[in-house]
Amino acid sequence: MKDLSMHILDIVQNSITADAKRIEVEITENVSSDIYRIVISDDGKGMTADFVEKVTDPYVTSRTTRKVGLGLPLLKQNAERTGGNLAITSEVGKGTVVKAEFRFGNIDRLPLGDIAGTIVLLAAANLNIRFIYKHITEKDKYCFDTKEVNEMLEGMPISEPGVIRFLKEMIKENLQEINIAG
Amino acid sequence: MGQVKSLADLRKIKDDLRVKMSLRENSNNPESLVQIKVAMATCGIASGAKQVMDFFIEELEKRNIQAVVTQTGCMGYCFAEPTVEITLPGQAPVVYGYVDTKKADDIIEKYIKSGELVDGIIPVNYETIENNKEEK
Image 1: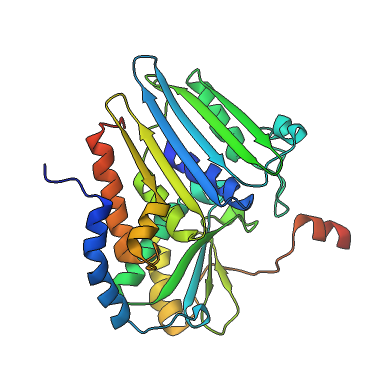
Image 2: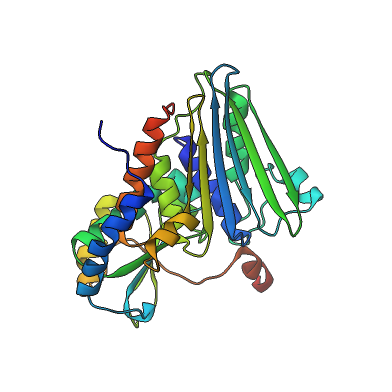
């Protein structure tokens, strides 16, 4: 994966497959403690403790179309490469939390990439799922919630091209305001 | 720098958008629309499925074609990613492989606009690994 937003797109796909109705992506930047943290949590069907153990093994996957699953292993590799780690907690029937921690200043930490486009794309392609995106920097924080967007839109779908364009710009501008790192 | 956009601004542009929407043919029936599914699992994302999906959303609007663009999981053609499934109204779905923005442009111009098939079709059989094994 070229950047962190692609990893996020990939991992969120797991949540969608797990029938989640609410998916939250939270990014925390902490320069002083040298941490860049991404937490993706959902209310999907969850995994058994046994499966969680094995899930970062590339040859373990719940899918049937092919026998390898590289999403989590690749994220784990990229996190560990910076001196960080990947932690997964899950409960059957409750949901799953995937937490990836990177060393902020490590040269191997991937840039964030087009996070605004990623979040809006997910929201537009999955209208029945509530997406929440929080980004916390040392300066301030920003929270995007499709529930609020839908209240504003009063029935117009997020997938409407004009809405997509507006939301992308809105998220980008707000992220600039809180001085996110690249 | 000017004022940062907020959701309140969305309310303002919403009415304009609604006018545009109603100007377009009013079809709430998804059966009558072109349906595009971009495969977005690890394999697809890593080979550029997001750019392809962005391209479809933007270009279809510019070219005034009504379509539903959504994402799907891995269809099992990881070797040919990014893959895109196109369903024209009333027709069987067609899966295209190795779709970059240039190919996507071809697909819109030829296949979606006039039904002319474009190179790069993957024959679909919807069989999974497990099914295959049972047969053998």
